[in-house]
Image (cartoon, rainbow, N blue to C red; front, side, top):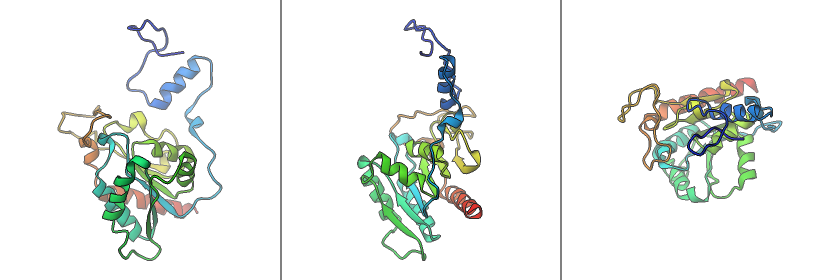
Length: 231
């Protein structure tokens, strides 16, 4: 079972570069006789959510990492608005997360009810999944935590670039997720509506760099307000 490769003389389905990743693999499984749909992304969510907001500043490559000072500004503004913010990251991201927490002024006076904590490097995968599953909101780049939020139905704000959300964005529950994407605007590399940067580059992608703190905070507050209304 594979996608066709003329070079390797492997028969199979044609690869569609413009296809959403979920649809691509569901198409392959269906072709092979299995059953697969976007709804299969769902993982059973907890009966109730906590009060925390997850902010995950890391990503595997520099091109998908929004600047740390902007994540810090988002953390500070959410905490000042009275939200409990948990900054998450893997063991290799401890320095990044510590910088975000420090730049957010976590030791300064915050509005009543607001707090900032650093959980980077302390959570194994099941524990991280639980933190995401029970969160009121996740703010992250295009990385694994965003996909966990989609699976658990946790509202999320996901910053995209260099890869467009049409390929990797939330595939279900569009009302629960806000994608921030500026690849439809001209970028220095000559991008247009079909812009696709290098997901493995070292430097932040210009489409991602266009995302502003104000628009991320506004999207987060809108989703949090909606969650309060649904509660």
